[in-house]
Image 1 (cartoon, rainbow, N blue to C red):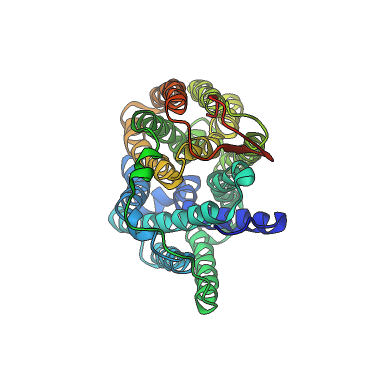
Image 2: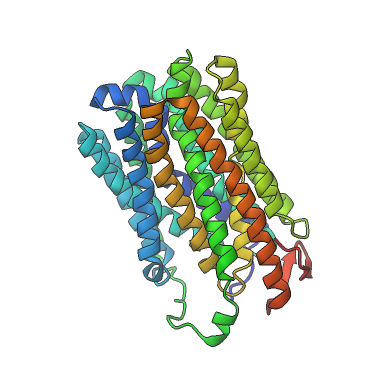
Length: 417
């Protein structure tokens, strides 16, 4: 086992993981924040726009599930080089080749592959280098990448997008992708490769695997919650435009809400490192605040958009890091297996939300769709609490070989989750 990194090293690991994750996650939110201009420029409606965003997440989900065994055998340098190449290629294609719905969808597939590679790189970095008593904070910082991507997407509207057009925002991601490739090349040239994980699974590993049913319930919960949350991130700007706000105003709201979500994700991760479990009830409560926010967005007025939009963004979407941390802890000697199920559920929700809910928006209007999104959040919160009961029962029946760590204490209470 590698020695625990120093505090400064841990901070660097968190920052790099968050930056890489942000770069991979930002394309659909750049599209969402500039949806009005892009749809007018490329001449397609809400339904096609939702499918394009969904293809991004669907591609990432399929790539994550189908390449997990291969990813475990690659060094972080190779993963980083692949991620940078895909982000660079997708950004160039968006800048130069996107001319209609079909070309946009093709580019989003490439960028979805880039997102999967960025997530795999960041997860590997977190799992292999952070000490246990910093992983709650680490997951909070890493998962802050998505609201950071939304915030940057919102800020792109009144700045770069307003001055040079929406394509210029993808020029920036292309340049950042090139920087990632250069950094990865440096890692490879210095030969910093980690040892490979064993390919076979031992009987002990099977005994220490996370329980299937509660993990499945948690994955379904994050699929539903991510569907609602990604719909909020992708279509809030379009709804704001309909209720009378300008694109710049909706961009500012997305930036403010995302800033609040980042702060809460980091804070909840820090708190998770300093308390004895009870993380999943906090996750459920956050999801139910998302329910309230989506219900409030049904009111077609600017004040409701500002109040409940901020609520849905800042609190209703602050649970991913805490959920991933809580479930990954139950992976025992196989945390990657637990976190992969949650990550795949998040990608699946990102694929389903914009496509299905976006299509519903075009067919039945935004108010009804906000009610459906609220229902997704509500059911997800209930499933999280049910999965917690099953996780706790499994902990009592199969105590882990290694005690869980909280700060500098090692304890194994039945309320870990």
